[in-house]
Length: 228
Image (tube, one colour):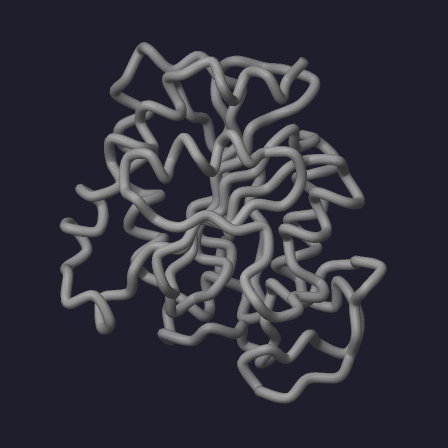
């Protein structure tokens, strides 16, 4: 698969936000995302590994858009939030968005889409509408799903035995899962890898325990169903 670089975005600090598109074009696309939270290096590593594999593999025939690291400033500084101190996964324009927050790590910003990183993401969504989104994070091992994609969550969990859930136990107003599934009708898997600190594993071990699941998902016909 050939992945071509799209027009980049700019972060708060003016750093480049890169994105890539597959050579197969479509009215709608499967999105693969990492680094929404800059300190979640596990997800960034997994997306990077998947990108390299996709570029070498000829069996994957999907229209893809890949955003390896959305929060590039946070990734550089090791911070969950961006350089404005905003959680990009609480800053999207959902009906349930609210400006109140208890912890700084969940700061939703002064208004929905106040952050340039999310403005860039919306530009991508407008130009290349998502049919399905796989966004890779790290927290505790869980496969969270929003919208009609429980089948995908179960597919992944069959390989790694992670629990699946349509609710992670606390509100996430302004999140990508809520925004895309409700506003765009695009189901979202928020895949939570184990963290380095809590699991005692290294990055490659985290990749290896999920490699087969992700590769087989992308090679299966399961995601093609969302393009109908």
